[in-house]
Length: 571
Ligand code: DGT
Ligand code: CA
Ligand code: CA
Ligand code: ZN
Image (cartoon, rainbow, N blue to C red):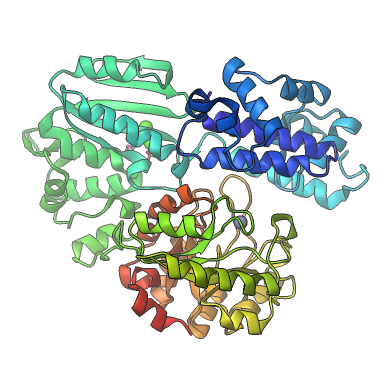
């Protein structure tokens, strides 16, 4: 059993227990699930190595939970979990993924209206039966319907950050085949979109049949839709569909260009070719007598069409073709160019690792500095820090900085913006921190003007350096809050507050179009991982991708600066 399957079971148990009003157990299961998710080693390997004793070395895993994990590993099932499911046989995972529906509401909905699935819920909500339930009302009924709509719209797409490691693994496997000369991921994955519909692999090989055999019989393939001589389509065990195409070497550049897309970008390119009297397809560029002209490499395809080659992240037909014609493409911020990470949670609140562990991992990844930004007291459910605890943590950080080399740990906070725009930590404490990020974790549904003014008020506090996850959206889970982004950007400009590009796979907040606006306005950005364990620091790459899709350059992103230059920027 894979780590993520074990973690998922533990998460679901937490939901069921919460439904049962259990006071402490849900948090314990959640914590264990988070730890399992954060592991780099397979839980079954840990178990093989040292049995339940080794399992108990996983943070948050005690005797009871280790026995459950053991049962899962040995039998693939868990009696305890099956019993919970029997007691309340509902699709708890899907139901709680609807905004505004938590475990307690799932229980009420099941007990009063026999609701087991999202479909059941939609039916009764449309029939106006939810509003009559105690504790619901018309407003929640509307919110539930909106949440269901949102869920439906995002179905079938996958969050890039969660599937990218698997796709890269497949790419590497293909690369190692002796029959494969070239391989690349194309499509939305190559463009580093937030979510992808399916994966597209392009391969050059002189033995295409061998490649087809290999691809369709990989261990992660659960279904083969089609298997041809140069093209196949499969479903992977993570639910994602994947295409592969083998093309001749002389078509590789054209094929890579074509299958990278996006479609609108391709159409615009094809027009340029037609104007030159040529034909552009996935096989190459041809003259009017269908004679092959070129197509072996992608750069050549662009250049012969009179365009500078451009990074895939720009290819959305949103101005990049014009810019390429005029040689005015942005010099996008490079992968690996960040020197610091300014949003990191630790064990002090809802993170899994210690301050020191986060510092060491950051150093391993080549970062020069990180800021520890644990949550604050309004977020009591994660043990948010109050004034006193923040001061304690500052002292602790000072100590750690004395014993750790090669990375500087800055003191910081993810201070909560209250409903009225005030912060839940006092100014004298904020003043003494190195880095202060402010963000919203409540009252997501305020009217636009109120929400905008609330955020503006927080940005006007001169201790606030960064607005964290500016719109609060969670991809496939929660809509952004209703804010006037032009005003937020203007305020960022006026107050010198930086806007975060949060790199967490299901946040990616700001999104590309807002990054573009911010960059244009001359507002500075910060790319942060929002890490809750040390593996999450890797997500910085996704934040860079997001910034690149928003046409951001290194100069627009303050944490591309070296420590000393960065410190000079801070008030
Ligand atoms: P996805 O899979 O929905 O996340 O997005 P893509 O961009 O990966 O789209 P996909 O997999 O349907 O197709 C891969 C690329 O192939 C797409 O980005 C552009 C190209 N392509 C697909 N269909 C067409 C088409 O009808 N016309 C043109 N010009 N290009 C197309
Ligand atoms: Ca695709
Ligand atoms: Ca495709
Ligand atoms: Zn957190």
